[in-house]
Image (cartoon, rainbow, N blue to C red; front, side):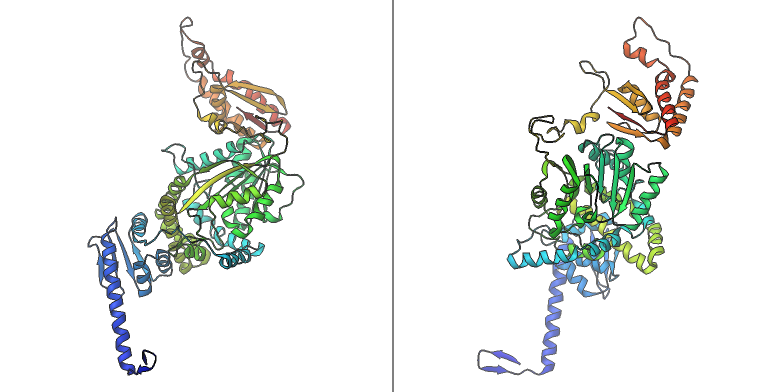
Length: 567
């Protein structure tokens, strides 16, 4: 029955309505396909779309082909809802042919709006969003969310992460670094920012597979505690601690940050890639807890993903829903300004903030490329956990997520911020500057000091390596010799480091082997009248340089104590 004004009504036979409905659907689909053809032609990479009935639209020689098995996913593609297309791919309703990099280039061109733009929430909508966030981030829910993602399969993650399994943004300090080198550069970048010193009580919130925890202990001599909610990660770090002889100085607990109780606060705290799981409604409590766990004058570094938009609560175009369903349930992103607001309300003063967004894009592409190169092994690892059907579904989700996230960071839809803060101790007379109220120097020079040339250039003072042990007197070496010794024992030269009691026998063996190899070489003749001081130092045999340090190592081994160094 059709209404024609207020009084006149016309009744149509049901058959006519059915024909009208079909006509409208045909016209709608024709318009949709016409729109889609135009958009495919404008993409930066050649792409084709195969319709459910078998017809093909787009490029004749495509780099990427999407084969659709239902029309709803086709509507999502035409309207730019690429997150919904991704969900259809995961569920097997759309098949992909082509490289992930080409697919992501096409996806960016198919969007109809900026997914990082959102509208400010009104009063009641803001209250509703907060209530949902509170409900999603109870202790029990957060534990399930973390285990859903991180306990997926250790073997799967090991295939495409670096050897240390560092699952966060790397730091490409130099353009030609490998992923493994960039991850080590990131770990050291964090330790430098925190000004870690031997003996510092250090907390790693969300310790993952232990990369930062062990790096800080082995290279900076800290007493380290890590916490995680993941069963798999907890077991893995426990094994590493025992294997590396760090028991007693490094420990890991499976506990929620809200429930961690300590007898005395920590000197330094890091939270790397964890606060994305906290939730907007819990962010104030999170920073209150961090402030409670940190001593006055201590430093904390919060490293995590932030929203690219000021008002959006998640990525648009269906991408946020995709991540919530398949990858990170309960994940919430805040703009960096909101994070700093909650940090300040907890009494933590931000002293430095660094945006590493392009570094994360490169990290994610490295992960994506590594996964793409090992798809059969990855599929087998996932199938071993939940069967072949489950493995294939998870594989499709992670292929899209890795590459899609790389695209998101390149486009600026998300960012990655390192926020360094102090907990002011209230004493304005101490510190490097009046009013510092902490050891923080309020310059950035200290972070990059060791990256500058430190050999004996004219007009500069040589750097010194100072080795310390409770079993022997302090030992000081000039930078070239100290660096050589540290390298020979298999350590990474840096501002601080440690040789644990368990590592000392191997260090002694490495040095003695190097001495023997050095003495097998013929002596270098030099002209004493023309040789400089540096030249004469270079002709000194390694035995003479290494002997004092070998003696320190042997004394330390006899008393079962560590050796630490500082520059």
